[in-house]
Amino acid sequence: MKLKLFNHHSYQLSFCREMLTIGIEQTRPYLSLVLAVLAIAFGQYPLLNQQTMTLWVIAAILVMLLGLGFKTYFSAQRIQQLDLVGLRRAEYGGFAYSAVVGLLWGNSSVLLLPQQLDHNLIITMIYLGVCAGASSIAIFGLAHLLVGSIFALTFFVARFPVVYPDFYGQLIFLFLIFHAVILRMAWERNKIIVANLLLNIEKEQLLAQQALEVANAKQANLEKSAFLAAASHDLRQPVHALMLLGHALKLRLPTGENAELIQRMLEAGQALADQFNNLMDLSRLEGGVYQLNSSTVPLAEFVYRLLSAQQQSAQQQGIQLKIHISKLLLNKAVMIDSGLLTRILDNLLGNAIKFSSARHKVLVTFKYQHGQLNIRVYDQAMGIPIEQQQHIFKPYIQLHNPTRDRAKGIGLGLSIVQEAVQLLGGRVILTSTLDKGSCFSVSLPVSLVEIPPKIVSHKMDLRVIGKSLEGKVLLLVEDDPMSAQALMTWAKDWGLNVYHYTDPRQVKPELRPDLILSDIRLPSEWDGIQWLSEWLDWWPNSRGVLVSGELLAETHQRAEQEGLLLLSKPVAPDLLVQTLAGLVR
Image (cartoon, rainbow, N blue to C red; front, side):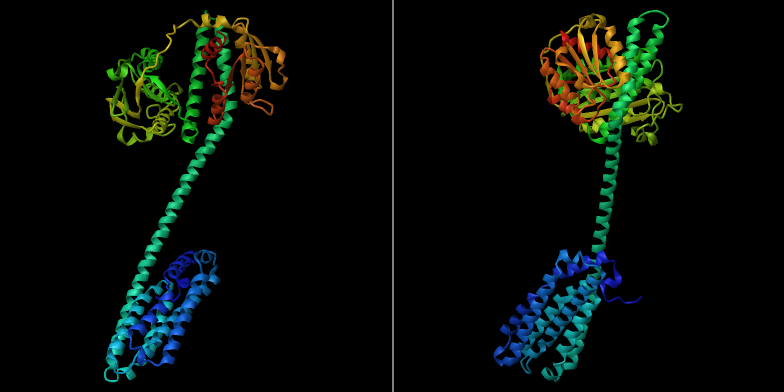
């Protein structure tokens, strides 16, 4: 193999820069002067030729200054800017410096005196120490090590016949062996340093690549979420309009042969809205834009109210749904984000019911242990193979829906569960046995608090609630024609007098509406949040609601800071009736 003397012959430019930086950092130019003074101080300096001694000390000072200049000029910052030509010059400069140091200490033999063994022993020991310490210059390359060693050895042993006339041959042989050993050790050290440096560079490259991949993945998620958030406003409009028009049609035809068709249409619209909301939820959770909003949740009441909505679906399929809440939780509330808890329970329970058969049982248990709310959902479905258990938490994965029956969703439920649980600082574990069923265990860190006092409300018929809207004036500010037409049709069926504007700048102060319903994206410099705040200042007795397809957390935070109620499209018509009726009471 061809021997390569300089680093730039063997390695890439970036690696050579690192080697040069390390070599210069290890260079100690001032040691030349310190050791020179020690050599004279501990030796028999009265016996030395004063002129020779003075010249040698001056040479040591010059070598020190040369080394300091070399080290100062090639700072770490400057080295990183060197091109190949500049790097070669730096290595050649280091080569010259190594040669000068070798000459200096090789010529330290001028301090040796015939028949002064004690004095010569001190000089020789200092020389050998310098040679051993100077082996660090191997980091510059093999050429630096060889030139320094050869010059030092050649000039130092040149005086041996004069100083040691009786046994100079043996001493020269011993010094040759010593230098060979030093060279061997220095080169082995160089290999170790190179290997470690290459390993560190490889590790840094892998870490940088990993960081880049993570950043790219996060950026892709953010871009996907930004796209969905931007598109959601337009995508939600037709779903919102469909729900409102269907509800208006149901009010006009409450009975008869078309009533069932209308109900099926509403159910289909609600299924579409649910799937759309699931997609948006997953986007917000994965994109990191969801803002946690913990509140006091009376657990037992919350659970029974939430699961009662699933009870009808379970009964229709002949499935027995059971709930067990530990005694400790019956009269306690938990501090948690109720929206995320709703998503977790809805999706886990919905999956258990959808994939179970008639006469099967679904059991949901709630326990509190060691600061953790433990939720378990058991089913008696067909179970999940071990090799598939990790895949089911990925989006759009459905193991038992090969025909892609949309009645069973689109495979986002468990992805939402996993993202929501992680955001709450918890974990979800699946245990499943084929042909026997599955159990999803969710552990969430929560704190228990006393249930706050509340005003007991009685459930009223929606038509009774809607009576309070008759004759009221509604200002509707909506620039989407489809949503606007649906809202006007729906609102008029509830007896509201609707004034519709597409441009908020056309609204006049003399209107004085009872209720205001406004979108957020409007064709003006201000958005709906700013306009609604302005209108409420105009009309202190009016009440307003924002209805929008916006998903950005900043938008919801701004509305909350202004004390405004924001409903996300598509809004359930029943919820909209209850909200507006509640505002006029």
